[in-house]
Length: 76
Image (tube, rainbow, N blue to C red; front, side, top):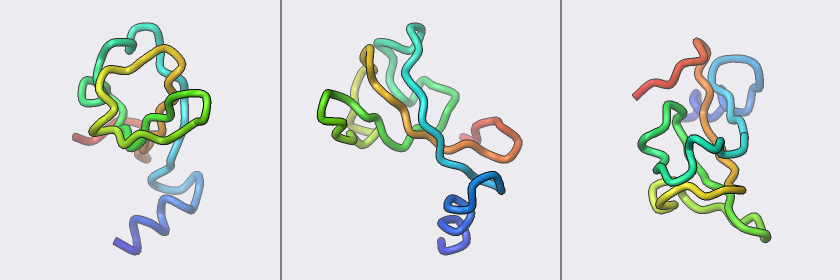
């Protein structure tokens, strides 16, 4: 576990945390339907993080915090 956390905080090496807006094509879908491994959905004006597993359908304006893998492909 410690090695994974260390990898996440060392940007540009191994696993990275990234943030991006939901695309128009993703609105109405759930995080389980996406290629990215989403860990948090940021929703609302107060930018409260919603755990990805309880976010429900994605909405316009949502931001996704996801894990980027070294080979740039999601692992399921």
